Image (cartoon, rainbow, N blue to C red; front, top):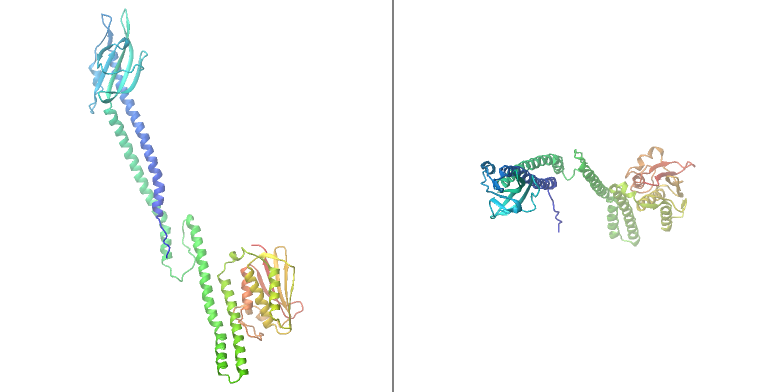
Length: 464
């Protein structure tokens, strides 16, 4: 079953995270604007309401009978009229809340405007409508008496509500225009910011399956890490594909000969008339099978070298001394001919960074290469030493050696020197050199101090 990945729009996410906070801030600003609009409308209306109450209070006086009397000026109530048809109510009362004139049912809260020349405001309800009441306390005096009074003027809140709504609407329109403009600007900015990604997508989409070169397009720094990771992945793919191609090409070339020999010897064995001829053909077939196994093993090592990254291999630890002893012991245990003397010189343990499997294969190839091409009799010494920061590894023999003019070319893959007197694939030195370089080491062919034979000298760093 194919895995289905859920994709999402980066543009939509950016717009959401950019505009959602702006929208929330806009809503909070609208709430604050409404409160401010309401406060502004109340302040303006309260001033008019207070002016009306003061105008009436100025017309309160003590008559000849010693009682309070008021002459309601028309202008005092006229100033409260509005296009919203607000209704106006008033009440004037004397000492001890004695009703003088106005609307008797209009209740004046006792706690408001108790002190002389004091003005207070309160919200109340009268005849089913919400009203705003201004209460003014004062005193009227004659030559003989001074009487306290209170003037209450109230109006319905239609005008002030409309004023608050108008202020809120204008504020909402401005903020809506601001949010819409911000959304447009953000949309354009996000679209322009994502253009490099679209160009990158188009460039990658135009590539063929064979094109694995690194992506070199200019991209934002936020995705440069992603591009670097993709380039690294493409390099790995390229190395793996190249290793596979090399393996198939080398395998088809190198295995053709032993397979042909096997087929030929099997036909000879089938046609043999004597047991000796059949046995000889089968023995040569078995030898060809061994050659094919050895070549195939070397080709697999080459494929692993070609497809493996150095940084992955350097994350492992190994014991070079243990590897040297194991290789020597394995070869000696495998019925080593009497005319081959193989030994190891070095400490019991040398720790370093490296892949033990590849290092073991490298050392085995070098020793087998000396055994196969060095002639007989031959002494082979594997020598390892640990330095402060490096590990040295030498494979020395006293065989026929390699001519100085061939020491460079003999390390190429599938090349066999002119002095080689045995069959081989020409991969032993090439594999050893590639593995040494894979671990950051050096690889060189030298003459031993005695002047006879060959020394394969390598040096590896201990740490990364």
